[in-house]
Amino acid sequence: MKRFQDLTDQEVLALAVSLEEEDERIYADFADGLREQFAATASIFEAMQREESEHRRRLIELHRARFGEHIPLIRRQDVRGFVQRRPVWLYRPLSLETVRRQATAIEYETRKFYEQAAQRSQDASVRQLLGDLALAERHHEQTAQALTSAVVDSHLGESEDTARRKLFVMQVIQPGLAGLMDGSVSTLAPVFAAAAATKSTHEAFLVGLAASLGAGISMGFAEALSDDGALTGRGHPWIRGVVCGAMTTGGGIGHTLPFLIIDFRAAMFVALVVVVLELAAITWVRKKYMDTPMWSAALQVAVGGALVFATGILIGNA
Image 1 (spheres, rainbow, N blue to C red):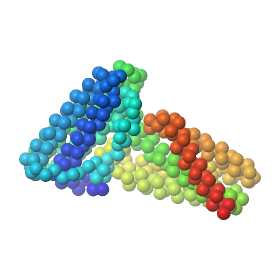
Image 2 (cartoon, rainbow, N blue to C red):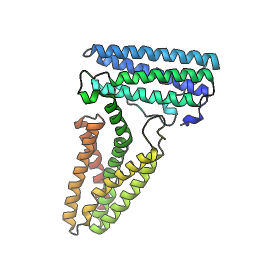
Image 3 (cartoon, rainbow, N blue to C red):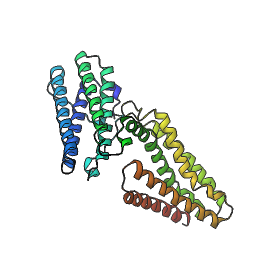
């Protein structure tokens, strides 16, 4: 992927055209998914779709005037720092709160892009248009935040609470959940393989401790280096890295500590209980903050955990 600061003015305009086209289609999907039950909200998204189409037209006109007819194909996945969006069809049937949250995140990210791009552009016409579009996206963001205030709980309708919750999810929950899942699941194999192979709680504890700390350091650096948060609003990268690394280590240490128990059978039993509690906690967090259906989250976590656990036991008894 290319760094945002390395883009030329032409590439910035080409990326902006791509973003507006994608947002236009997403809002069309929202309107289509809500039209039957929530016609008024669907009409708002239809209006937002038309505005995104107008933004795209203005960007294309400026590109044609400055750089000619050919617009390079540059997409969000080609530039470092953008959050990858899940396709709308995965959310169907659409709920008002899910749509509002997704629309708010889309407009926030697009606004940040326009503001950053306008600041670094040296071309007056490009800078003016990008600044105007940033203001328009801010208006869209406010509209998205207030979309369902009449039909959801009042605390969800408050824009400040919405923004605070969104930032909390992006800066803490997402990296923390990634770390907890990696630490809780990936360390199962080495810990239980060591326990099954040696029948020694001390050896299993040392292996689990090393695996947990190693995974925590690795995941922490991976998260910190994934993006700088300038466009995504995900916060300082090293804070996310610390959160991710700490949760990774904690997820592995959880089922490692029972092996401080001298009795091997008791240690294994307690470790298994801790594993079940860890997987239940992951399922709950995914359901509450990531909009994953409970049965789906539980099945995915249980299958993944069972496969890794079985791998460890099989290797340990080999």
